[in-house]
Image (tube, helix red, strand yellow):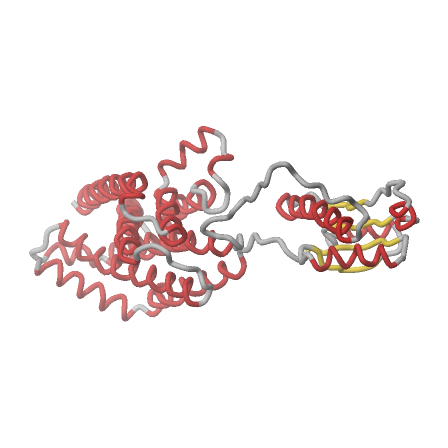
Length: 367
């Protein structure tokens, strides 16, 4: 135990003296959380809208106002030809275009039917779907409010309710996931870089000359990064809660222990990368090899249910797949440890395998 403490003390001194590592540890997570927190937003609002109003009546202007007041659409320009509509959509200046035909008011009042048209840029499916679904609802509500369409009474009183995120804020979904994403990037990277740097400088050989065993060396070097990882995770949670106002409905203690378990897996990946890499560039490439699938296949952005079966199966081997359900379950749903046991035991198994394998690999590499 004394040898482990000595190595830990040495590692902390090295971290404090290395300004680049300090910046990476302290500043980078906060910068990433701030940029991602404000930048990643799937709440579609204020779609750039061109309006081609060929009717120019009170009713047509009221219809345009109804679209604006919904907050889904923002008038970017009022145009005077279909050519301008096409140019706006082609150049990306507009995402949708509302085309109101001539005699719109007269046809509606006479109940002849009027072909109101909305042209939607479908290159990005998310805003396109929002525009498609919300526009129909807006038109129906407008006609009912103007007394132009009879309000139908349904025989079924259907009242859907939203739990956990009633306002459908994307920050509630994305920010808890950023805890896992940032830890997945930062912790293996700094762990692998620190150990590989020691190998490049020949410091590990000097340590082995002293009466210290390989496992004591490894534990002494990774424990400081466990503490650093906990500090990074804690700072992310505090910023998420106090700045972005994401509620934490579950137990902070449960969140702490399960985040610590995830940290061990991340450290194991960094340790394994350092064991097989000859320099810092190779270790960074190995860590990135694990990081990219974590973003795309874990459910951080894309629902795993929509993926092909074999891709969905690959996701079971990604630690972040389980941690996302853990962190979102605790923060948003208030779930407890035993509620998340199906996510905990795979992480525990991964942590055991990756640490044992990394220590053996590292020991053989040292020998």
